[in-house]
Length: 169
Image (cartoon, rainbow, N blue to C red; front, side):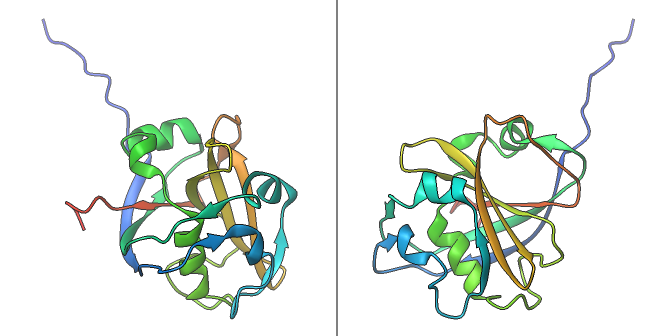
């Protein structure tokens, strides 16, 4: 008698990586409210402000980020599980902002600028893990924060970004 294995198809397709440089100063997230040199914001949503504006991130070492194409509709839970859990996917607003600076006016690059989300994961001021939705819309960058416990499902046009462990970089 043969056994049938319940194999789920991959949810994410790994794509390219980019290096986020080290920082030497803390990032006071409130200070980024449309005031980041070279980055044009069209909207910073209230949920992001509520969750992150009272947070300061310490200087960070250089880190590589890998981009993944989402292959089908999914909420955050299965995405996080496929990438190895919360500890593996957690990044910083500092890193997302560093990548935004490279494409500050919506030019082509590592982040997509086609209206679909670039999804990062970071902890808010209370330590809750959030999905950061960063996208280009209306001639500027849009940034929002959504709890990973929210049942929102991302469609297959979005891309997910997470730090690459030093052993894989």
